[in-house]
Image (tube, rainbow, N blue to C red; front, side, top):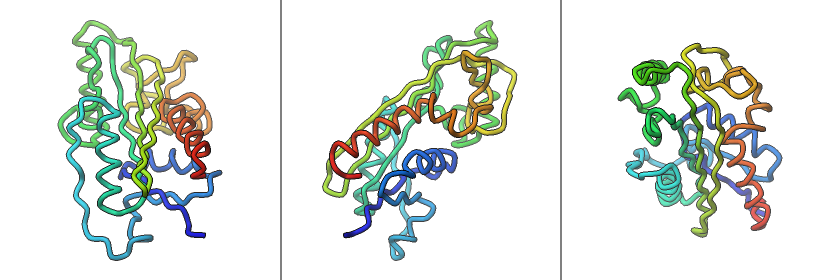
Length: 207
């Protein structure tokens, strides 16, 4: 029986670790973009798709379909980010490039705190959102979403997370960056979406 392979359509190593941890009990092989030549040694350079969706779900669909078409592999794409109430939902779909450079966590966090302070607060209600889309080799599409609420404060704490995690406080007073991987999976937006995705895969006999 041919091995079931799912391409993780992201170069964000933090997301890759969370997905691999969540799917480790399933009979599938997850292959990140950084290791795609492990399964497709002759694949050429694949440019990143243009993510011009208005929502996290739209962007996840764009990426999943794009990488499935480029590789022929089942492709799992995540689009996620932070929305802050006093910023009218920003940074939203621009979370990874809020300060202008994609993936610059320090700059993104500095801009976030400055923008919140400009609104006259240092304790801003916020939520993490995650949308997952998996496009199977036969073109079937599965989607799952998750949300985690908390607040943004200017004091960074913890070293376990990435992105905005050191500034995102849960109701128990800890930041997302202070949680173990197991704790984070249990309560996070991505953990909720991944659990739903695993359930969908099992229901459809893929795993």
